[in-house]
Length: 78
Image 1 (tube, rainbow, N blue to C red):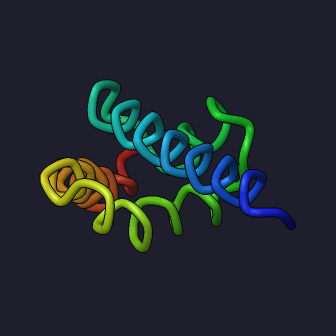
Image 2: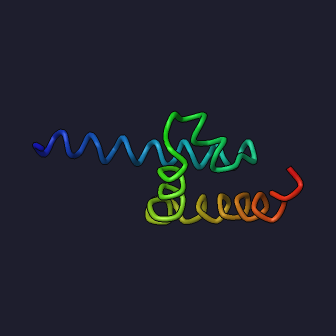
Image 3: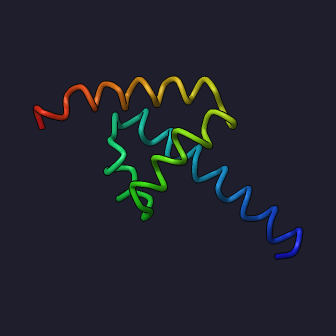
């Protein structure tokens, strides 16, 4: 893969992570809902939120973790 294509993919992934994170925070969405909305797998969204997002935006990461923690604590109700 050439350098230009590699740069494009990094930027594409970075933007996807930010969009997924904003969606989760704004909609109080679950990982599953975000995966469906963005047409990617649940594992991809999970990795984006837990591994990639802290390197991109620590503040947004904290907000996402609050939403996901709340969703996890209430999943038995749904």
